[in-house]
Image 1 (cartoon, rainbow, N blue to C red):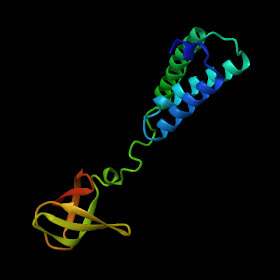
Image 2 (cartoon, rainbow, N blue to C red; image 1 turned 180 degrees about the horizontal axis):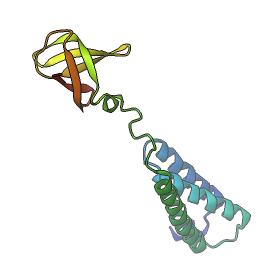
Image 3 (cartoon, rainbow, N blue to C red; image 1 turned 135 degrees about the vertical axis):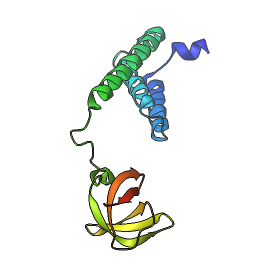
Length: 149
C-alpha cells in the first residue's frame, strides 16, 4: 500500500479525475466536478514535476479541492440573483384579478375559460357557460374563480 502511494504518477491522478467527472455525469450536483478538476490539476502538476512527493500531492489535492469547491459555491451564490420578472413562466399569476367569460360551464366545481387562444381549467362554484368570472387564485395549473357581481 505505502509503495503504491510513494510512486503515484500523473496517470493515477488523471484516472481519478476522469472517474470523478464520469460520476458527476450521473448526478452528483456539481460537487464531484470540482474535485475531479482538482485531481486532474494535480495530475498535470505531477507530470510537470515528476519528483513531487506523494504527501505534497495529497496536500495539493486537498487544497485544490477546497479552493475549487469554495470558488464554485461563491459563484453560484452571487449568480442566484432575484429575477426582475418574478412572474415569468407563471402565467396563471398574471391572470389574477382579470375577468373572463366561462367557455364551458363549471359543473361539480370544474370548468374552463378561454384566455387568448388557450383553454384554462378553473375551479369554483357551479355556473353556466358564458357567465362572467374573476380569477381570484391559482392552484398549480388550475385557476380559482368566482362569479362577478
